[in-house]
Length: 391
Image (tube, rainbow, N blue to C red; front, side, top):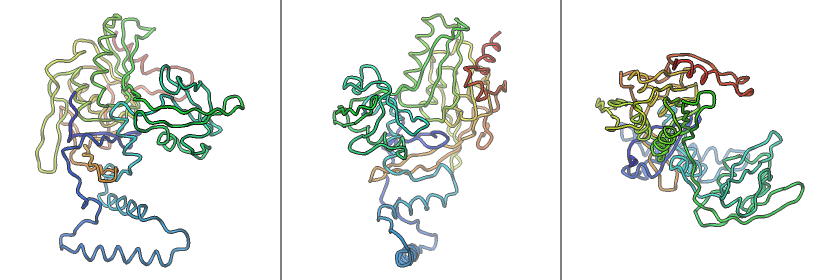
Protein backbone atom coordinates (compact mmCIF):
# COMPACT_ATOMS: atom_id res chain seq x y z
CA UNK A 1 0.00 0.00 0.00
CA UNK A 2 1.35 3.38 -0.96
CA UNK A 3 0.45 5.84 1.82
CA UNK A 4 -1.42 8.98 0.92
CA UNK A 5 0.30 12.29 1.53
CA UNK A 6 -2.96 14.17 1.85
CA UNK A 7 -5.69 12.07 3.36
CA UNK A 8 -5.98 10.75 6.84
CA UNK A 9 -8.88 10.08 9.12
CA UNK A 10 -8.16 9.04 12.64
CA UNK A 11 -8.75 9.15 16.32
CA UNK A 12 -7.12 7.34 19.18
CA UNK A 13 -9.24 6.43 22.17
CA UNK A 14 -11.77 8.75 20.58
CA UNK A 15 -8.92 11.22 20.33
CA UNK A 16 -6.23 11.69 17.72
CA UNK A 17 -3.81 9.82 15.51
CA UNK A 18 -0.95 11.43 13.62
CA UNK A 19 1.44 10.58 10.83
CA UNK A 20 3.85 13.38 9.96
CA UNK A 21 5.12 11.82 6.76
CA UNK A 22 1.64 11.43 5.36
CA UNK A 23 1.21 15.12 4.76
CA UNK A 24 4.42 15.82 2.89
CA UNK A 25 2.41 17.45 0.12
CA UNK A 26 1.13 20.09 2.54
CA UNK A 27 3.56 22.87 3.46
CA UNK A 28 3.02 24.36 6.89
CA UNK A 29 4.05 28.01 6.91
CA UNK A 30 5.00 29.95 10.05
CA UNK A 31 1.74 31.88 9.70
CA UNK A 32 -0.05 28.82 11.05
CA UNK A 33 1.15 29.69 14.54
CA UNK A 34 0.19 33.35 14.37
CA UNK A 35 -3.15 34.92 15.13
CA UNK A 36 -5.54 34.90 12.17
CA UNK A 37 -6.10 38.07 10.19
CA UNK A 38 -9.60 39.42 10.37
CA UNK A 39 -11.75 40.40 7.43
CA UNK A 40 -10.94 44.04 8.21
CA UNK A 41 -7.17 43.45 8.02
CA UNK A 42 -6.95 44.34 11.69
CA UNK A 43 -4.17 41.87 12.55
CA UNK A 44 -1.88 44.56 13.99
CA UNK A 45 -4.62 45.54 16.42
CA UNK A 46 -5.16 41.87 17.35
CA UNK A 47 -1.48 41.35 18.06
CA UNK A 48 -1.36 44.54 20.10
CA UNK A 49 -4.31 43.29 22.15
CA UNK A 50 -2.58 39.96 22.69
CA UNK A 51 0.60 41.70 23.84
CA UNK A 52 -1.44 44.02 26.06
CA UNK A 53 -3.20 41.07 27.71
CA UNK A 54 0.08 39.26 28.25
CA UNK A 55 1.73 42.37 29.68
CA UNK A 56 -1.08 42.87 32.20
CA UNK A 57 -1.03 39.22 33.27
CA UNK A 58 2.77 39.21 33.50
CA UNK A 59 2.78 42.28 35.73
CA UNK A 60 -0.05 41.15 37.99
CA UNK A 61 0.35 37.36 38.28
CA UNK A 62 1.37 35.98 41.66
CA UNK A 63 3.41 32.89 40.88
CA UNK A 64 5.87 31.48 38.38
CA UNK A 65 5.42 32.84 34.88
CA UNK A 66 5.08 30.37 31.99
CA UNK A 67 7.95 29.96 29.58
CA UNK A 68 7.87 31.53 26.14
CA UNK A 69 7.20 28.10 24.66
CA UNK A 70 4.34 27.40 27.06
CA UNK A 71 2.89 30.81 26.21
CA UNK A 72 3.17 30.13 22.47
CA UNK A 73 1.63 26.66 22.69
CA UNK A 74 -1.24 27.94 24.86
CA UNK A 75 -1.94 30.62 22.25
CA UNK A 76 -2.13 28.03 19.46
CA UNK A 77 -4.30 25.70 21.54
CA UNK A 78 -6.66 28.61 22.20
CA UNK A 79 -6.70 29.58 18.54
CA UNK A 80 -7.81 26.07 17.55
CA UNK A 81 -10.72 26.14 20.01
CA UNK A 82 -12.15 29.09 18.07
CA UNK A 83 -13.04 26.67 15.24
CA UNK A 84 -15.47 24.94 17.61
CA UNK A 85 -14.51 21.52 16.24
CA UNK A 86 -13.18 18.80 18.57
CA UNK A 87 -10.94 17.39 15.83
CA UNK A 88 -9.33 20.66 14.67
CA UNK A 89 -6.52 20.84 17.19
CA UNK A 90 -2.88 21.61 17.88
CA UNK A 91 -0.71 18.67 18.95
CA UNK A 92 2.62 19.26 20.70
CA UNK A 93 5.83 17.51 19.56
CA UNK A 94 6.00 14.51 21.96
CA UNK A 95 2.43 13.43 21.19
CA UNK A 96 3.00 14.03 17.49
CA UNK A 97 6.00 11.71 17.53
CA UNK A 98 4.26 8.97 19.53
CA UNK A 99 1.24 8.96 17.30
CA UNK A 100 3.37 9.08 14.16
CA UNK A 101 5.10 5.91 15.31
CA UNK A 102 1.78 4.30 16.09
CA UNK A 103 0.52 4.78 12.55
CA UNK A 104 3.77 3.75 10.91
CA UNK A 105 3.54 0.37 12.65
CA UNK A 106 7.11 0.57 13.95
CA UNK A 107 9.34 2.63 16.24
CA UNK A 108 12.77 2.67 17.84
CA UNK A 109 12.53 1.11 21.27
CA UNK A 110 13.69 -1.57 23.69
CA UNK A 111 11.05 -4.18 22.87
CA UNK A 112 9.10 -4.46 26.11
CA UNK A 113 5.52 -4.02 27.17
CA UNK A 114 4.76 -1.81 30.16
CA UNK A 115 1.77 -2.08 32.45
CA UNK A 116 0.82 -0.04 35.49
CA UNK A 117 -0.28 -1.86 38.62
CA UNK A 118 -2.84 -0.56 41.09
CA UNK A 119 -0.07 0.56 43.44
CA UNK A 120 1.45 2.75 40.71
CA UNK A 121 4.42 0.51 39.90
CA UNK A 122 5.34 -0.02 36.24
CA UNK A 123 6.01 -3.62 35.28
CA UNK A 124 8.09 -4.64 32.26
CA UNK A 125 7.27 -7.55 29.96
CA UNK A 126 10.16 -8.01 27.50
CA UNK A 127 9.31 -9.40 24.07
CA UNK A 128 11.19 -12.55 23.01
CA UNK A 129 14.39 -11.94 21.03
CA UNK A 130 14.10 -8.16 21.41
CA UNK A 131 16.72 -5.80 22.92
CA UNK A 132 15.33 -5.71 26.47
CA UNK A 133 15.20 -9.50 26.73
CA UNK A 134 18.66 -9.87 25.21
CA UNK A 135 20.03 -7.36 27.73
CA UNK A 136 18.65 -9.41 30.64
CA UNK A 137 15.36 -7.72 31.50
CA UNK A 138 12.86 -10.27 32.84
CA UNK A 139 9.10 -10.52 33.07
CA UNK A 140 7.90 -8.77 36.22
CA UNK A 141 10.85 -6.40 36.62
CA UNK A 142 9.72 -3.10 38.15
CA UNK A 143 10.95 -0.06 36.23
CA UNK A 144 12.43 2.49 38.65
CA UNK A 145 14.58 4.67 36.38
CA UNK A 146 14.78 5.35 32.64
CA UNK A 147 17.35 7.57 30.91
CA UNK A 148 18.29 9.10 34.26
CA UNK A 149 14.71 9.94 35.25
CA UNK A 150 13.22 8.43 38.39
CA UNK A 151 10.00 6.51 37.66
CA UNK A 152 7.33 6.97 40.33
CA UNK A 153 3.59 6.55 40.69
CA UNK A 154 3.13 10.09 39.37
CA UNK A 155 5.02 9.34 36.13
CA UNK A 156 2.71 8.92 33.15
CA UNK A 157 2.90 6.07 30.68
CA UNK A 158 3.43 8.59 27.88
CA UNK A 159 6.40 10.07 29.73
CA UNK A 160 7.97 6.63 30.13
CA UNK A 161 7.37 5.88 26.46
CA UNK A 162 9.14 9.12 25.51
CA UNK A 163 12.15 8.10 27.62
CA UNK A 164 12.42 4.55 26.27
CA UNK A 165 11.81 5.28 22.61
CA UNK A 166 14.31 6.96 20.34
CA UNK A 167 16.41 6.61 17.23
CA UNK A 168 17.28 3.06 16.24
CA UNK A 169 20.85 2.23 17.29
CA UNK A 170 21.00 4.65 20.23
CA UNK A 171 21.44 3.43 23.83
CA UNK A 172 19.18 3.99 26.81
CA UNK A 173 19.94 2.97 30.39
CA UNK A 174 17.20 1.68 32.68
CA UNK A 175 17.13 0.48 36.27
CA UNK A 176 14.72 -2.12 37.61
CA UNK A 177 13.79 -3.62 40.93
CA UNK A 178 13.83 -7.41 40.91
CA UNK A 179 12.86 -9.03 44.19
CA UNK A 180 14.26 -6.12 46.22
CA UNK A 181 17.49 -6.06 44.20
CA UNK A 182 18.26 -3.13 41.92
CA UNK A 183 19.72 -3.91 38.50
CA UNK A 184 20.84 -1.63 35.68
CA UNK A 185 20.79 -2.34 31.94
CA UNK A 186 22.05 -0.32 29.00
CA UNK A 187 19.95 -1.30 25.98
CA UNK A 188 20.49 -0.41 22.35
CA UNK A 189 17.22 0.58 20.73
CA UNK A 190 16.07 -1.42 17.70
CA UNK A 191 13.20 -1.15 15.26
CA UNK A 192 10.13 -2.60 16.97
CA UNK A 193 7.14 -3.64 14.89
CA UNK A 194 3.68 -3.02 16.33
CA UNK A 195 1.20 -5.34 14.61
CA UNK A 196 -2.28 -3.95 14.02
CA UNK A 197 -3.89 -7.29 13.13
CA UNK A 198 -4.21 -10.46 15.20
CA UNK A 199 -5.97 -13.64 14.15
CA UNK A 200 -6.80 -17.19 15.20
CA UNK A 201 -9.14 -20.05 14.49
CA UNK A 202 -11.98 -20.16 17.02
CA UNK A 203 -11.81 -23.27 19.18
CA UNK A 204 -15.59 -23.36 19.57
CA UNK A 205 -16.09 -23.15 15.79
CA UNK A 206 -13.17 -24.83 13.99
CA UNK A 207 -14.31 -23.62 10.55
CA UNK A 208 -14.39 -19.94 11.63
CA UNK A 209 -11.47 -17.53 11.47
CA UNK A 210 -11.32 -14.57 13.82
CA UNK A 211 -9.48 -11.36 12.84
CA UNK A 212 -9.10 -8.33 15.11
CA UNK A 213 -7.83 -4.97 13.86
CA UNK A 214 -6.70 -2.58 16.59
CA UNK A 215 -5.70 0.41 14.43
CA UNK A 216 -5.54 1.31 10.73
CA UNK A 217 -1.83 1.85 10.09
CA UNK A 218 0.49 1.72 7.10
CA UNK A 219 0.93 -2.03 7.54
CA UNK A 220 -2.68 -3.06 8.22
CA UNK A 221 -3.65 -4.02 4.67
CA UNK A 222 -0.68 -6.38 4.25
CA UNK A 223 -1.18 -7.84 7.73
CA UNK A 224 -4.84 -8.51 6.94
CA UNK A 225 -4.06 -10.28 3.67
CA UNK A 226 -1.54 -12.51 5.47
CA UNK A 227 -4.11 -13.25 8.19
CA UNK A 228 -6.76 -14.27 5.66
CA UNK A 229 -4.29 -16.51 3.80
CA UNK A 230 -3.17 -18.16 7.03
CA UNK A 231 -6.75 -18.78 8.18
CA UNK A 232 -7.69 -20.27 4.81
CA UNK A 233 -4.78 -22.68 5.12
CA UNK A 234 -6.11 -23.70 8.55
CA UNK A 235 -9.54 -24.44 7.10
CA UNK A 236 -11.46 -21.21 7.68
CA UNK A 237 -14.69 -21.11 5.70
CA UNK A 238 -16.10 -17.95 7.26
CA UNK A 239 -14.74 -14.92 9.11
CA UNK A 240 -15.49 -12.75 12.12
CA UNK A 241 -13.90 -9.28 11.81
CA UNK A 242 -13.51 -7.59 15.20
CA UNK A 243 -13.45 -3.77 15.06
CA UNK A 244 -14.36 -3.25 18.70
CA UNK A 245 -12.31 -0.60 20.50
CA UNK A 246 -10.69 0.41 17.20
CA UNK A 247 -10.51 4.20 17.33
CA UNK A 248 -9.49 4.73 13.69
CA UNK A 249 -6.31 5.47 11.79
CA UNK A 250 -5.42 6.16 8.18
CA UNK A 251 -8.11 6.78 5.59
CA UNK A 252 -6.21 4.96 2.85
CA UNK A 253 -5.75 1.95 5.13
CA UNK A 254 -9.50 1.85 5.81
CA UNK A 255 -10.23 1.90 2.07
CA UNK A 256 -7.71 -0.88 1.46
CA UNK A 257 -9.10 -3.00 4.31
CA UNK A 258 -12.70 -2.55 3.18
CA UNK A 259 -11.59 -3.59 -0.31
CA UNK A 260 -10.58 -7.01 0.98
CA UNK A 261 -14.25 -7.69 1.74
CA UNK A 262 -16.26 -5.61 -0.76
CA UNK A 263 -16.02 -4.11 -4.23
CA UNK A 264 -17.20 -0.74 -5.51
CA UNK A 265 -17.57 2.47 -3.49
CA UNK A 266 -16.18 2.48 0.06
CA UNK A 267 -16.98 6.08 1.00
CA UNK A 268 -17.83 9.51 -0.35
CA UNK A 269 -16.23 12.73 0.85
CA UNK A 270 -18.20 15.95 1.16
CA UNK A 271 -15.88 18.96 0.94
CA UNK A 272 -16.29 22.67 1.58
CA UNK A 273 -16.13 23.49 -2.15
CA UNK A 274 -19.13 21.27 -2.83
CA UNK A 275 -17.16 18.45 -4.45
CA UNK A 276 -18.06 14.91 -3.43
CA UNK A 277 -15.34 12.53 -4.64
CA UNK A 278 -15.90 8.80 -4.25
CA UNK A 279 -13.24 6.34 -3.12
CA UNK A 280 -13.51 2.76 -4.32
CA UNK A 281 -12.04 -0.62 -3.47
CA UNK A 282 -9.34 -2.14 -5.61
CA UNK A 283 -10.06 -4.72 -8.31
CA UNK A 284 -9.61 -7.74 -6.03
CA UNK A 285 -9.89 -8.61 -2.34
CA UNK A 286 -8.54 -11.39 -0.18
CA UNK A 287 -11.85 -12.31 1.49
CA UNK A 288 -14.69 -11.26 -0.77
CA UNK A 289 -15.95 -14.84 -1.04
CA UNK A 290 -16.08 -15.74 2.66
CA UNK A 291 -19.22 -15.29 4.80
CA UNK A 292 -18.58 -12.38 7.16
CA UNK A 293 -19.69 -10.94 10.48
CA UNK A 294 -18.35 -7.67 11.95
CA UNK A 295 -18.16 -6.92 15.68
CA UNK A 296 -18.54 -3.27 16.77
CA UNK A 297 -19.03 -1.32 19.98
CA UNK A 298 -19.20 2.25 21.28
CA UNK A 299 -15.44 2.67 20.73
CA UNK A 300 -15.57 1.62 17.10
CA UNK A 301 -14.83 4.97 15.50
CA UNK A 302 -13.70 6.88 12.44
CA UNK A 303 -11.72 4.66 10.04
CA UNK A 304 -13.25 1.52 11.56
CA UNK A 305 -16.72 3.00 10.99
CA UNK A 306 -15.78 3.53 7.33
CA UNK A 307 -15.10 -0.20 6.98
CA UNK A 308 -18.14 -1.27 9.00
CA UNK A 309 -20.45 1.19 7.23
CA UNK A 310 -19.34 0.06 3.77
CA UNK A 311 -19.81 -3.61 4.66
CA UNK A 312 -23.27 -2.87 6.06
CA UNK A 313 -24.39 -0.77 3.09
CA UNK A 314 -23.23 -3.46 0.66
CA UNK A 315 -25.07 -6.09 2.73
CA UNK A 316 -21.82 -8.00 2.69
CA UNK A 317 -22.07 -9.08 6.33
CA UNK A 318 -23.98 -8.39 9.53
CA UNK A 319 -22.80 -5.84 12.08
CA UNK A 320 -23.13 -7.25 15.59
CA UNK A 321 -22.63 -5.47 18.92
CA UNK A 322 -23.31 -1.95 20.17
CA UNK A 323 -23.93 1.40 18.47
CA UNK A 324 -20.65 2.81 17.14
CA UNK A 325 -19.07 6.11 18.17
CA UNK A 326 -20.08 8.39 15.28
CA UNK A 327 -17.04 10.23 13.88
CA UNK A 328 -17.69 11.10 10.25
CA UNK A 329 -15.04 13.71 9.55
CA UNK A 330 -11.68 13.71 7.74
CA UNK A 331 -8.61 15.57 8.99
CA UNK A 332 -5.50 16.77 7.20
CA UNK A 333 -2.48 16.68 9.48
CA UNK A 334 0.04 19.46 8.88
CA UNK A 335 3.48 19.22 10.48
CA UNK A 336 4.93 22.39 11.93
CA UNK A 337 8.57 23.42 12.07
CA UNK A 338 9.23 22.34 15.69
CA UNK A 339 7.81 18.82 15.37
CA UNK A 340 4.30 19.75 16.47
CA UNK A 341 1.33 19.51 14.13
CA UNK A 342 -2.10 20.87 13.31
CA UNK A 343 -5.11 18.66 12.67
CA UNK A 344 -7.69 20.44 10.52
CA UNK A 345 -11.07 19.00 9.55
CA UNK A 346 -11.35 19.27 5.77
CA UNK A 347 -14.32 17.06 4.90
CA UNK A 348 -17.17 14.91 6.10
CA UNK A 349 -17.41 11.36 4.83
CA UNK A 350 -20.52 9.43 3.87
CA UNK A 351 -21.12 5.69 3.57
CA UNK A 352 -21.75 4.23 0.09
CA UNK A 353 -25.48 4.79 0.65
CA UNK A 354 -24.70 8.42 1.61
CA UNK A 355 -25.35 8.06 5.31
CA UNK A 356 -23.76 10.73 7.51
CA UNK A 357 -22.85 9.21 10.89
CA UNK A 358 -21.43 12.17 12.86
CA UNK A 359 -22.88 12.13 16.35
CA UNK A 360 -25.05 9.11 15.51
CA UNK A 361 -22.81 6.21 14.67
CA UNK A 362 -23.81 2.98 12.99
CA UNK A 363 -26.64 0.85 14.35
CA UNK A 364 -25.70 -2.84 14.31
CA UNK A 365 -27.92 -5.27 12.43
CA UNK A 366 -27.99 -7.30 15.64
CA UNK A 367 -27.66 -5.33 18.88
CA UNK A 368 -25.87 -7.32 21.57
CA UNK A 369 -24.06 -5.87 24.57
CA UNK A 370 -21.01 -7.07 26.44
CA UNK A 371 -20.78 -6.18 30.11
CA UNK A 372 -17.75 -5.80 32.32
CA UNK A 373 -18.86 -8.96 34.06
CA UNK A 374 -18.69 -10.73 30.70
CA UNK A 375 -15.16 -9.43 30.18
CA UNK A 376 -14.06 -10.40 33.70
CA UNK A 377 -15.32 -13.97 33.27
CA UNK A 378 -14.11 -14.43 29.70
CA UNK A 379 -17.58 -14.48 28.15
CA UNK A 380 -18.17 -12.86 24.78
CA UNK A 381 -21.87 -12.83 23.84
CA UNK A 382 -21.09 -10.79 20.72
CA UNK A 383 -18.88 -13.53 19.29
CA UNK A 384 -21.50 -16.08 20.37
CA UNK A 385 -24.17 -14.13 18.47
CA UNK A 386 -21.94 -13.85 15.41
CA UNK A 387 -21.45 -17.60 15.34
CA UNK A 388 -25.17 -18.24 15.84
CA UNK A 389 -26.03 -15.88 12.96
CA UNK A 390 -24.05 -18.00 10.51
CA UNK A 391 -26.55 -20.83 10.99
